[in-house]
Length: 223
Image (cartoon, rainbow, N blue to C red; front, side):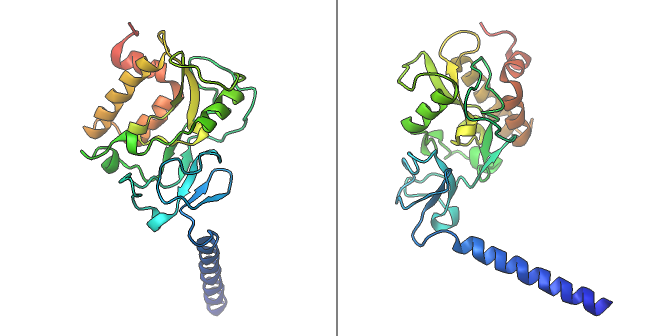
């Protein structure tokens, strides 16, 4: 009996090793990123990578190390809930959770986002093609809207948010639900995370669940 169990354990370990080897070999030689549509990019920088393929799912260069731009490794996009729709999304002050559940980058940890060298500009990678895709999902004509609409991150970049389309939604540029109001909340949450008042994961979940309620809790009603 013990011998059989030992044999089964060895076989299981061998299978896991083979699976890991296949996963590592899945990426073509020279690929620097896997895009969200399953294709691979060979871009030598992190700027604009997978811009026509719905953004980057996983960086592959140097095991996910910083790219030529000095950007921190992003890792994989982790969705906060399952994305169940990609059309007929309902526009409103908050994202339609079926289409836009929110997502964060697995390697943007508290230590990374709270480092003095961290800059959101180095990890921002939402090409215009992806913004147009968000607009179409929400029933909007795909065009430039200027300051009246911003394709905003649900979980902000300063909270480790992902550039994945699941973390984007069209947010108005003015009014109590506008992106300028949300920016104020994002800055406060970043401070709270870095001061140790709340965990990064809690901040991500809360801002994705209902940022307006969270704003009123921190600041009262928007002016």
